[in-house]
Amino acid sequence: MKRAILLMLWLTLAILGGGEHALAHAALVESHPADGASVEEAPATVRLHFNEPVSPLVVSLTDARGQVHRGLHAAVRNEVLEVAIPGDLPRGSHVLSYRVASGDGHPIGGSVVFSIGAPTGSAPTPGVEGNQAVRRSLWLARVALYLGLFAGVGGTFFQAWLAPGRKAGRVERILTGFVVLGIVAATMSLGLQGVDALGETPASLGTVAAWAAGWRTSFGPTSAIGAVALLLAGMGLRGQMGWRRVCTISAMAGVGLSLAWSGHASAAAPQWLTRPAVFLHAVGVAYWIGALIPLVFAIRQAPAVALPVVRRFSTGALMAVAMLTLAGLVLAAIQVEAPANLTGTDYGRVLIAKTILVITLLGLAALNRMRLTPALASPGGTDGRWLVRSVAVEIVLSVAILALVGLWRFTPPPRALAASAEATASASVHLHSPRIMAQVTLSPGRAGVTRARIVIASGRAEPTSPKEVILVLARPEAGIEAIARPARRDGRQGWLVEGLVLPQAGAWQVRVDILVDDFEKSSLEGSISIRP
Image (cartoon, rainbow, N blue to C red):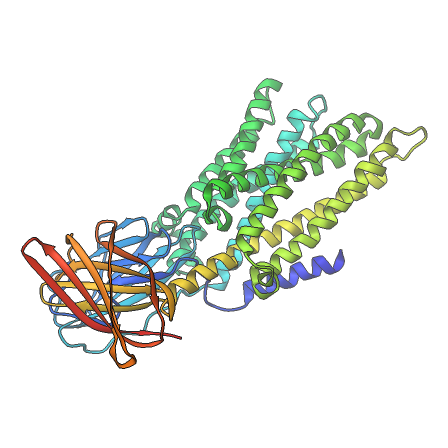
């Protein structure tokens, strides 16, 4: 057990202290105009297509004169972000910089360079910098929020439903402290989330922009629902028993809903499975962890009198443990994807450490149920000291597990890393004429079976809706003549060609035939490089 706790501490320091770049889960699939493309006229909009839905945080444009245009209008539709571009841009190269929040609340930033006429140079693409003080504060706030939700809400549920006849006293004060801690942590987490999303320092926590950015991420509803659940739990510490039970069971539902609203697991597909799994997992954890502190006080005060309470908790714990274990296994399978990712990723290593501590916790729970709890009822049996010690160790292990879970805020799961890698491994080419342009993206951009996505727009990058689009690829020097495939419409401007087979790597000729209307047809030509 000592080794497991030391491993947890090592992982905490390694992940929080190692590396300045925050890991993000969304990835830019393509842009229109494409990164590095040259167009004849200034586009009315620039469209950024990501591999998952995003929320805009900051968008700015640095034009060819070096002037920075801020406050650009940005509209988002699921995975596509459309940014309105000023109409008076000079000829030359321009840099559109963006920061968006992915579906699980993580920030991602980058830049797209496009030129009007001839290029005049480009600026480097900025990365997403992670401030170490912000990351440590985020981790502490997240762990404190977990303690409030699980120990505070779960503890008040225990008092109302499993130990209704016991006087609260000191336990009530302790649970009130956890509830207050959780409310403060939920509030601070929201602001810190915004600071991290904007790539700012802790000093910007006092600005409205940081809190607004935090609310725009998926963590905004999580913090709000969590705070409501904590307030209900606090109300459930006083009053008539019926009122207390209504408040505490509502608070437990709020715990599940809060944690199912955002985060790695909730953002994974299929969400009809992952979100309910997170909900059940969170409620099961709150039932278990929330009972530990009240149990210690109950057993210490009167072991024999506490026996019915312990037995009621133990009966419910069987269902709670089964529920959280099954949900945890489902979520782990979806997130990890392959056994090799357990040791090959930070996420997997955190999961291994957590599993070690959970198995130890389950072993103690089994010991308590089979040996130490029955000893309370035996004639001349134990005075409960060993059971108290065992539950105290459970509390320590639970805190260590929550500390590990807090690290998942900074460790993308393997399934997200795989999705980002696939998105960034595509091949893309921008084709244009004065009247019309097309962005062709092959995913993956290597030889074999691939999928082509074509985005059509006018010469000023304005939306257009052609009647028909045909993709033609050829490699004459290798004896491969034209491979023509009709595209099917995918959304307002996108067209798809599924199951496209490119047998060889190298440079391919690409042509897009566009039937604009019944009287106009355009053909755009270029080349695209396919990897082995």
